[in-house]
Amino acid sequence: MANTAFQSTQGQQGATGYTGYTGYTGYTGSTGSPTFKNGGTTKDAADASGTQNIAHGLGAVPKYIRITAYGVGTANGLQCITFTVYNGTTQSSISIRRTGTSTLETTQTFVLNLSNTTGTQTGAVTFDGTNIIITWTKVNSPTGTYYLLWEANS
Image 1 (cartoon, helix red, strand yellow):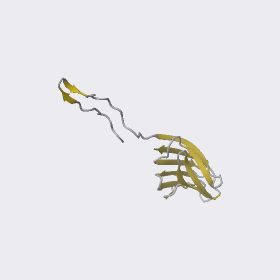
Image 2 (cartoon, rainbow, N blue to C red):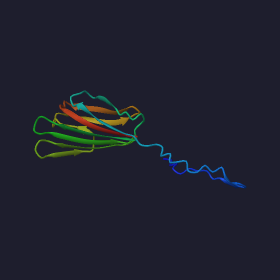
Image 3 (cartoon, rainbow, N blue to C red):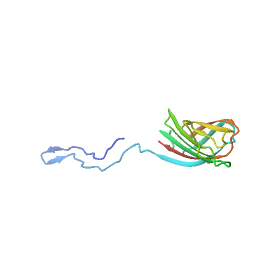
Image 4 (cartoon, rainbow, N blue to C red):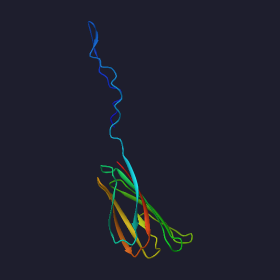
């Protein structure tokens, strides 16, 4: 970022004093300020494998995005929370699932799993200048609704 806070020009001493000095021109700020956007959406676990586009509204390609997804199943208190970040090159994720009692399962993938052993949705994340793009892969017959909180930064 360029900081142009203290610009002035040097004058020249002449027979009648200094000429050409413009003095302090004022603070003009920094360029390239980051932009942040966020929002929420849902994902139906029963959907077929496919692409989900989420408009991020940055007006530019993000530097990175983050998605937090949460869901609660209807049977046995199943709960799932998963986090993923993507920087344009690498997607890093962690998912935690409570299977009904006090059993916890963790994995390093962006996986939505509320239906115990009946199925999952796993997401691969990318982005472009308009959308956050999640390519979901469905395995077996998952059910439930997942709530996604997304963040995008440029």
